[in-house]
Image (cartoon, rainbow, N blue to C red):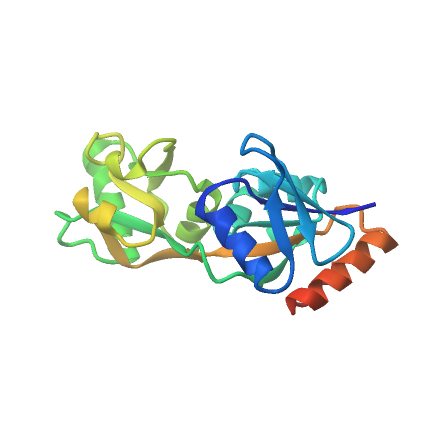
Length: 234
């Protein structure tokens, strides 16, 4: 039985992942054309490379269809309920940095913190008769964060397109989204709450607790972990 590792299938995340493993003596390469979603691994025997979208990797780890996977720490936390019971965080990889933040219109001069947002949300509901809308793709993470902060008078609305544009388009009053530089937020006249960091994400190597960890797979994992210089126990 081979050990299956899921890696982002395109773009900078794939390239950076290949570079990270390659720098540690584990060479990854896509098989054939860019339309093929498999590849090879040299440096450790018994590993099968599976190329997936970063958003698919949490699901495949949860289902145990892959043993290891590289994806954003934000995606694992948002897509998997009680994620620690399903996956083990093996190693942060030091790239793919992005912050999941809460942002409000720059014109809201009295709203700088989450407490301010809580007060604004209560006032909004009194005035308009419905809850303040926060557009996001990250429902679980944002809901858990706001609950912990005691914010109640809001509703999350799903954003599948450009989340930053929802306020301008009047489909939301605030947003929770991933940002790296903040330029897109500023271009859309939005500001980040001073304590509105929900999660600082980066590309991370995870192991699936529910994968088929027979003796052969565990042996390959131990060899891979030794080559990478990381601890990996499932």
